[in-house]
Amino acid sequence: MASTSPAGTAAGLVDLLTARLGTSGVLTDPDVMAAYSRDRLPLAPSGTPLAVALPSSTEEVQDVVRTCADAGVPVVPRGAGSGLCGGANALDGCVVLALTRMNRIVEVDAANRVAVVEPGVINADLRQAVSAHDLFYPPDPASYDFCTLGGNLATNAGGLCCVKYGVTSDSVLGLDVVLADGSLLRTGRRTVKGVAGYDLTKLFVGSEGTLGVITRATLALRPLPQAPGTLVASFPDTADAGTAVTRIVGEGLVPSLMEIMDATTVRAVERHLGTDLGSGDGGGTLLLCQSDAGGEAASRELAALERVCDESGAALVHATTDPAEGGMLMQARRSVHPAIESMGAQHMIDDVCVPRTRIAELIDGCARISEEVGLRIVVNGHAGDGNMHPTVIYDGDDEFARARTAFDAICELGLSLGGTVSGEHGIGKFKQDLLARELGPVGLRVHRDIRRALDPHGVFNPGSMFE
Image (cartoon, rainbow, N blue to C red):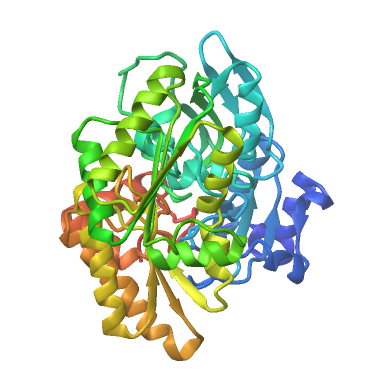
């Protein structure tokens, strides 16, 4: 991008941004900006931004975008930085557009089960707010207590309840989006149904900040579910756990959550939390399920899940309707990432999604890849929708090349099993070549054409999603 205005100098651009946002709305201290320069994937490339802009309104976002576009400076939108694909990583000389100050829950329309929010609202805060109206916002990434809804929208985040409630896009009715020329686009509707025009809402959800900046979202809510009952089953090998998942799906059971952890993950969580999840009782792979149907319906669903697990060879099955006990089991699942971090080495978290009937093949394939490259690979993920998170453990630069080889091999394995290279984390700046392989040349061309049509001068997040 070439500068076309006096704002083209670094100092001039910072001055213009400061005039619009105030001194507290523009950060230039190198140490402070470093905290805004990348997400939670340390491996994806990142640069040093010219400044970090902290707008408080849609109008201020429009001002920042227009100013940067006029100066020929790229804009990288970001939320809390909880992503795992490098999609919010800064480029040298860019302006990072951090949306965390736009954190208002604008409206909760209980009668129509709708919430209107700004992108800086934390996922768990919205859940808490709408629960006061006996309503429920389903998407729940594992980082739900600190990730923001804007980031969830940008990556089309999933989470633990996708098996029953779907991903973020399934709960989005409409958006306000600032385009590359600073204009404001409103997409979607507030009604339950609506098919007028192209579905631009779904186009922007999951676009990782490459098409526009989401400044407001209209979200669909559901009635608040009952307190969930929880089941945990420990299996001596992966194949038996895979059989249980296949049978659960085949019998038409739809638990509100179904998670899987391989033996290495289970042991890491046990060490991290100082608790026993059954790995010492003849078990290895752990299956964790919940039912939020409530009452007798939940009891029947848990009983059916228990029967399937027993018949599939589980060494241990335990079900509970005690919310506190269920919460402790859920803490084990949400502690997987810090437990892996506590193993003391670097790691690459993959995000492949395969048909649910092929989860066991993916886990077994990861074991083979682990032997081939000589590195540990731990596997956990959302068994209910087939979205697995194999994680390659490696130590320092000496093992990085082997780790990247394993990471790519896992993605290739996922594709060969009829899957995709990303179920929920996105593409960012780490999987561009893998996306190209999955889309094929025609699909990639169409994606590029859409991006050029909306952002012809490459203002938004260049280098992300596509090389």
